[in-house]
Image 1 (tube, rainbow, N blue to C red):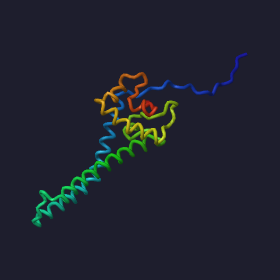
Image 2 (image 1 turned 90 degrees about the vertical axis):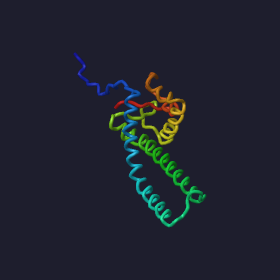
Image 3 (image 1 turned 30 degrees about the vertical axis):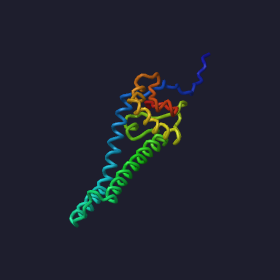
Image 4 (image 1 turned 45 degrees about the vertical axis):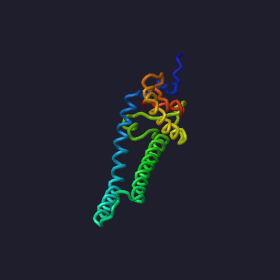
Length: 168
């Protein structure tokens, strides 16, 4: 007599790692989103700065060698750079460590960031992965290119943060 008991264990699908071009496309999508948000936030700042510059010039102020004016420009650009870095870091780290396990670009392409066991990465890992991208880029982008050649399609920053990027 045959055993009619059904085995309810699910078959596990083999993991499909997201290769270089999938990740690059997600990066492009994310950069479009980040750039759009940054411009929306920065246009009013630049407008106010431009209006104040125009007002100062109309009042006859000579700003060519004014240390306070030059310092304010340097400070302004520095603040924009710092806010851009912090905003981008938080976008990547918070999104990749969230329940979605990826940025909007990754979600659009149905890829996600996992730890080596397939679980969601924590904020620290996502932060390490983000700042590891700086190293991946500094060495002539070789850290990024590695994703096209490693067995599990890992870039240098993925290896540093003990992560995979997989297809859902």
